[in-house]
Length: 156
Length: 156
Image 1 (cartoon, rainbow over the protein chains, first blue to last red):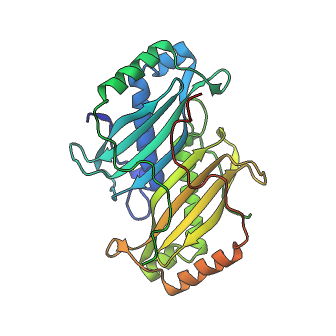
Image 2: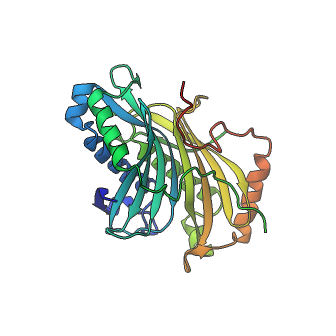
């Protein structure tokens, strides 16, 4: 899977332990979503042309490993499903080129008409790119951390 | 419900729309978790004394309303369940004193021995405060956004 977004862990993103704070895993995924929007024609020029943007409605995060200040990381993004207004996606965080996932996030994104603040059907050109992305990923396996409920493990 | 944490939306937290970016909702909740740790005796002095801290293992976020730069907000926190090592909590974001929720997050936190990086049973004094918090909240109703799966709505 190609990387959607690459960065290095900023000193501003670590907590008192020197580890990436939970919210900044999501910031890295948020930047990956921006990169996905660029790919789909919803970059700044595309947002101006269509009057549309994407909002995150809901997300789930699994923190699987500590990440330290200065580490290089990359995000890989999979389109799980889509309809005329929504993208159901999955991001996975990795050291560059490595298989082991450091964190995963399942997300639901909604196409929004910025003039009204309401949901809107994807612009035709954007919808074509969404379909192309779905077609290109048709045979990708399902990611590991999806459709999870948060709860206590059974008592032993 | 009393506020766990209060802040104002920083200019650094808004995106190109002037709205609070998804990751910074989680940063506000993350600061509320820090405040909860203070309440439980896991502030800086308590972390030094016990050698323990809390890690976020998993979280779910629902983004319910836009929040703009400069707005005052507060987080209210509910302990949903706990065992000897884990806290299952829920944060809700509000304008100060208002009922309407702007965002909610269900989270699982694990007590970690910082020397080994492994899970550990809560320190006795911390466990007592956890139990006091659970007792004080015994009659609180369940929050609205918990135990959610992310998925496409049924086709119409």
